[in-house]
Length: 584
Ligand code: BGC
Image (cartoon, rainbow, N blue to C red; front, side, top):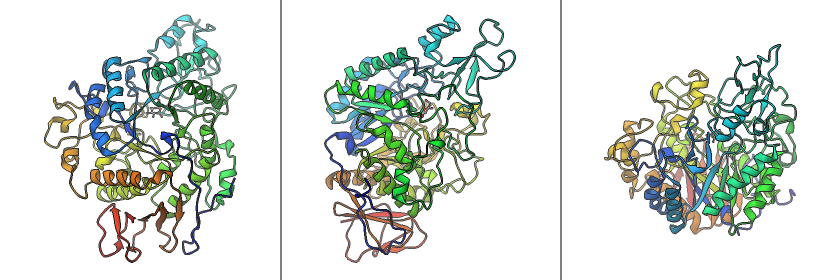
C-alpha cells in the first residue's frame, strides 16, 4: 500500500521523491472542477432580494466561460429557511422563493447544453420540523410508528425534565428540544444536532431508508449528475445515545484534529484514530447506507456521483467514505483547514493523495464554501477561528484584506495544480473577502441566534455576489434588494470590472483553469522539488513547475524558467512572499 507513497521531506535539499502514481481518469468526477452555487446569493431574477433558479439559468454562461466542469447547488427545496434551506420540508419540490420544478428542469437543461454537470444537495441527517413526516410524528404521539422516523426519547430526571443526554447542538445550546413539558402524556424530547427546527432522522428505521431511496431516484430521474451529501458523517448515532464531552479543541462538526505532528506519513495513513469520534459522528453504520445509495446510482446511466460532506479526521478515516462501493468523493476539509505554512501544506497534500489512493479514489481540494470564512480572509487571520464561528467587528485577529487576497490567490494557484477534483465557491473567483461588518439585525445564521451573538456564524461568506459594478445590487438583480447587504467596496470586485483585466482575480482563475485543463494536471502526479527552502511549496506536475512562497523572504526562481501564470506580479526571476507561479 505504501510502495507508491513517499513522505514529504522536511529538509527540502534532499532528492526529489514522487508522491503518487496517477489515478485512472475514466469518470468525469475524478478530475472535475466543481463550482458551488449558493442559490440565495448567486443571481436573483425576480428581484425579491433572494437568488433563484431562473437567475442561475441566466448566469450559467458565465460559469461555462470561466472553465469549470460542473456546478453544485446548495438547497433550493421547499423549506421555512431557518437554516438557509438546510431545513427541508419537501425533498421533492422547489421552494417558491427559488422558483418551480419547471425552472429546475430549465436550469438543468441549460447547464447540460453548456456542458456543465449538475450536482444537487441532499440533506438526509435531518428534515425541517415543518416537514409532513415530522408533523405527523408529533401528532401521532409517543410509541407510534411516525415517532420512530425521528429520534424521540423520554427525558431524564424525576419528571423527564432533563434532556436524554448531554449532547450539544453544532449551532450552540442543547441538541434536544422537548415536545411539550406541560403535557403529562407527552413530555418526550427530540434530537437535533443542528437547530431545533431540524429534527434528526432515525436511520436505523428502514422506513427512513426507503424514503431517501425515493428522493435519490426523484432527482436522478430528472437528470441530475449527483448529490453533495450534507452531514454525511452524522446519520447514524451510537447505540444507546451515550453522553459525550468533546475534547477542548474539537471542531464543531467533528474534525477534532488529533496531534499528528512528527508522525511518519506511513504511520499516519495506516492509523485508526476512532477514539476521536463523537457518538454522533463517523459511526461505522453510515457506510451501509452509502453502499445502498451507490447501488441506486448504479441503476442510472453515466457516472453519477455522491460527494460526502463529512468533517472526519484523519484523512485515512475519511477515505472510508469513498471506498469503491460507497461514495465517489469527499470534501477534503483537512486541506481547507491547513494553516498558511509550507510544511503543513506539503504534509496535507501528501497525506491526502496517499490516504485516498489506498481506496483508489482521487483527492478533492477545497478552500472555501458557504460554511467557512472565505479564504481571502481566513488565510490572513491572526487568531484562532473555529469552523462555524465566523468573523465580525469584534473578532480577534481580523485579517489584513490585502494580505488575505494575496495568499488566497497563491493558495488557489497551488490547489488548481494538484491532481484530482477541486471545488470552487461562488465569488472566490472574484477574490471576495468575508463580509465582516454586517449589521447585527441583518444576520440570519442560526448560530448567531443560538449563541446569543457570541459566534457571528456564516453570513459573512453568503452575501450576494457582484456581477456588474454600476448596476443595482451589483447586477445580482434589477431591484437593488439583497437579503444580506453588499459592501460598498464590492463595485471594484464585480465580474464586469475584472473581465478582461490582466492581473484581476477573475482572469487569474480563468488562466489557472485553462492551463490546468490544457496540461491535464488533474490526471497527473506531483513530484516535490527540493532546493527552494523550508517556506516554499514546490512541485512538478506533467511538466508544469509550481512554486509557492509562503514565507517572508523573496525566493529565487530557477534561471531561464518562463512564467506561465503568476498569482501576483513576479519580476526579475524573484518570487515575492505570498505568491505562487506556474512555470513552463
Ligand atoms: C451545511 C450547513 C448546514 C448544516 C446543517 C452543513 O454542513 O453545509 O450549511 O447548516 O449542514 O444542515
